[in-house]
Amino acid sequence: MMNRLPQYLYHATTSNVVASIKKYGLGGKMPKQLWWDYTNTEYEHRSVGVFLADDEYVAESFLECSETFENFAEHYQEQYNQELEIVVFQINTSDLDLDKLSIDTNNRNDEYPTYFYNGVIDYQKLKIIELY
Image 1: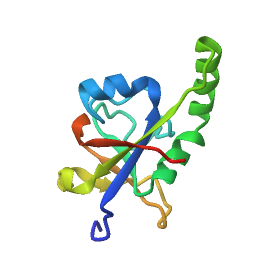
Image 2: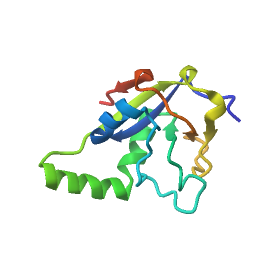
Image 3: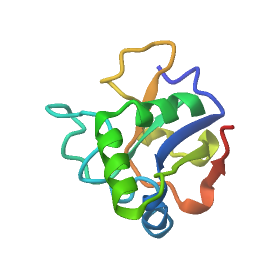
Image 4: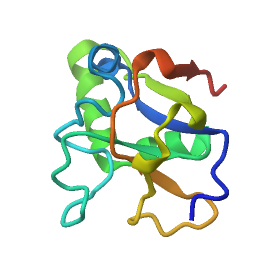
């Protein structure tokens, strides 16, 4: 199942949680409200872990296409009078414990699979990348 794992995986999040990621690691403290709707799934009540995509633009699009993100970004702009920025992290798969990595069973897109990492990725192992 994991035989075609790419060298890098990606996670997109909002800039306002980077301080928390620096402190707890990526996946160390899952937000109460996930950007994707995982109601009634195996991921609904997780407190540790992170979703990863095999392409940086796919990771960003999962975030940007979320209705929850749209509402939060609008609220953020009204409250702070600035646009909510998106941060994309690149993770080298050689830095991961592959026993904790699995295919995200809620994503049925074979061309762009997403993954769930059932653990914490240290901030020092993350690279922030620019998409544009």
